Image (cartoon, rainbow, N blue to C red):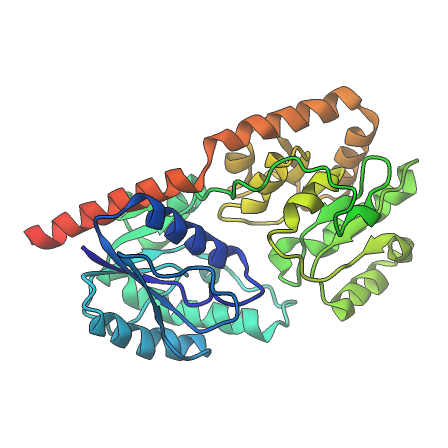
Length: 377
């Protein structure tokens, strides 16, 4: 088999969720499969995190404007490489492409009502692009992969597909996420007693940043410890607007914002944290849940969408629309030592169900099944 994998963004310096998923899948396939031939299509960038091996070829395809890269440059590069199957990994695919397609559709948030508070041009353009492209490529896809049973059911129902067309393959987490204890690490200065609270929020309304900060304000009013809140990569003006609008000036001196945190630094950040807040309104999977659990850090997460499925029913599941609920669970962790240790152990046990190796094994099995269908058709 000559398999093409779209991985446009994996060479960029500041990677995000979908970038890490396809990167880890490629690295695992590179280790386990010496039989098939792979062509990885990547835009040039500073972080060359995948290199050629005898049966894996990295093809640099110039261009940074994603729609043009995907719709014009990618299908031409794939045709030149004579790939027999093209796996597009980032929710969309070329509309005009004669090569059999496999699509990873992480979610269908683009079909849900758009929050008018979201002023991010990048996020709004991505939402519009997916709305235009996805309905046009569904019939061309031999399989659609998604990442949780929640999202599989959502896709089947809203797009009118069958469960045979939509395959669920869980994500994994990287092996370097484990309990770390390094007093010289870059984040050691944030450690106090048993650490800070850690929150990975951004300006997307689904991340629930505003309500989480209101919950943190309530926590500071009631806690005797008053732990700091470490937040990564959040726009300062967006933060100031939240603080002013909700009259929560008490949180300002307690916030630590180091900017973008590299994935290789995250194990230290999680390990030094007292608890991790993952209070989104909606997620299709939630890799940070697994990363924090693997580091022995209790997770306060939402009782919506895929999060109970991934974290487990015994995890700390809160109503993400209730700042009081979020606050109460933080206080319970702080005042109930037995409950805290129980959550640590639950997390360490839960992550044993997930791995990138298992993800790649399922992916390879799917490639083989689709290839047999192509040859027999």
